[in-house]
Image 1 (cartoon, rainbow over the protein chains, first blue to last red):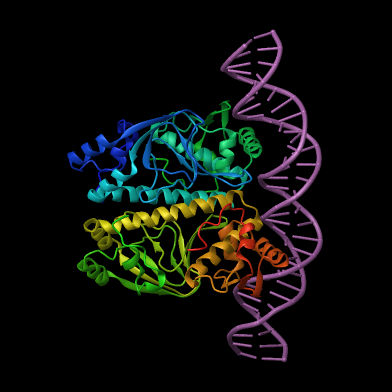
Image 2: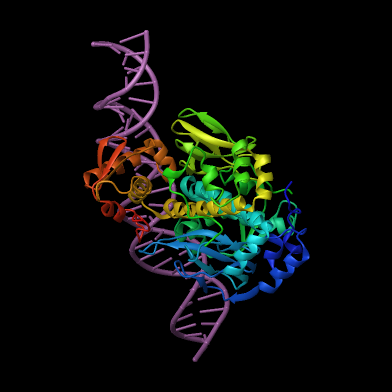
Length: 248
Length: 248
DNA sequence: CCTCTTGTTTGATCCTGATCAAAGCGACTG
DNA sequence: CAGTCGCTTTGATCAGGATCAAACAAGAGG
């Protein structure tokens, strides 16, 4: 349907996600080679800030391993997460030189980076990259709009359930739906980070997690290890009207 | 800095925004001609739905005159606006065939459309279009993230002030800051639409508008005609920490 | 072993914004 | 002009989540 081969499954992805995400498998070999020699890696410890809002940002990057968050902070400290970067996700924008929000490593993090200028130059000669990047950005925009519905109109319980469903679904996507219905996964975020994601306080997050446990929607092996006995049960709590892709 | 000439001011824009927004002035004349012969116009009355969420969408378009909104609706009727389209804004995504949300004309609306397939084909041969589109999409993503901060963390009063500031600023951009400090403009949205934008109820919107009037931050000539005696005063109510571009 | 720290849970109370209800205000029409 | 419709304002009350506060759990490090 497009110029690109079907998206590669994450486990097929080698050490550098950009190579697979931004460039299609039919691109000429020398373009790939050019990309290869441009890239370099940066590692961050959990909790470390990758870049502060307003700072000069002279690279673009994609996540290789670990999780990073994009957050906006108001003067008085109110904080809202506006993006969650998982392996293979992309950050940075060709054509803008300062970061519009904080980027923070929530776990140990490895990113694959390209200096912005040569990356932009390369975009000009290899249109596939621009097209793939457009596609990814449009997906992100769709996700942001789902998120806006969540922030603006969902109840605390629905917000929690939605977040759990998002993470569960992503994990299930990788692990291809483990034990037929029953699903278990690690929560990569603290209660406070969940609160920042959802526009709630950490106390409310904690209370609603307890409520979902009490009501049998989820179980907790440990505080950060979740078991979902029946995904449909969880999904019913999200307020969304269709499942939309649990089954591949 | 890029392949594109500096962005044209809106008043320079002819009858078809895509021509100016999506293609740079240095592009070859025959590309412009090809775009010209592809385009067609569609008109909608205020209140009319352009396309329903989930419907097949076989065109891309940009707004010529009027205002359209993108909204998501939950089963029980809760509604969240996720996009506001002003003249020269773009809708539709190459590479996806169904609309992910409702598009509605809030005023009488004229859109300049291109059938999706030929538009995609053209994108493949004219990389400038893809690049320009990427740039626009990234701007939209930034706007969506600002909006997420508003929805997740701002108070009702801050939300109202932010919305008024956004509209005032946009109007000032066009009319180049009319009466030195004092600014007046029409609100293109009903109280209910404002509520859907802000994740509030229409009653709360009405009350906070009254409060801002009582406190001298705004005046109302008519219910939909706003006077801002001092923009800085309004801006102080938004919770944002820097003005960020009122003055060109 | 104890202490310090970080993340989490739970309780008590408060307050912002939602909900329910009624009335005002134009604009348009018969 | 009365009557209606769409939009807006205002009032009374309610409730969901925030805030303040305390205690718990699990490491890490001395």
